[in-house]
Length: 247
Image (cartoon, rainbow, N blue to C red; front, side, top):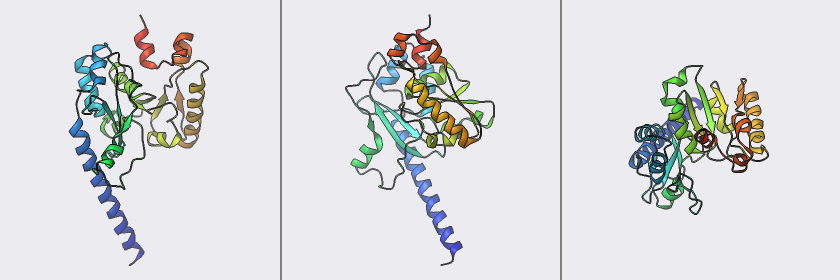
């Protein structure tokens, strides 16, 4: 077989695999789409968002609900490929239920034989599919904001809709590889705060490295470092905590 034929066959196989994962991923998140989770109810009952805002945010991020009330934060990349889904439980006060550890949807689906072994489960930024869906991403002046918690991204998407909000899913989950799809966009990172500012320094280092790779600056916000009180820093608050604590 000629080299050109080998390449053609390989590309066709890759396109087929991507199309199949797109279709199956769409079927999976559409089955669970909705605001019936503890998380969505808590966001509204605690006054972070109205019912209408919560509905919009759930549609925007394709939020799902597990059978036992957990929220499913689907990770869908910029090519509309479903990578994974983090199932988390929240208390009525809208804080995480730390007695129940997060579960990855692909682990459960594989366990039940509902996913193929070659499914791409490399994790990506939560909300990354918005780069494909949101027409604002075609404009150079639109800022992409990256926070730690999915909860923060969901709420901030309605509070500050002039940004496109993405989340890492954890303070140690930020790296240059995950930021790579954001090359060419105006990116600003909003790290959570802590007592000694270590999270800010860690995210600043990643931003510097990403800036070198991208050829354009990735900014790190100092908002929390400048305005959070010592008690708030000890509590490791995030952007939502700061904004909603203001009188």
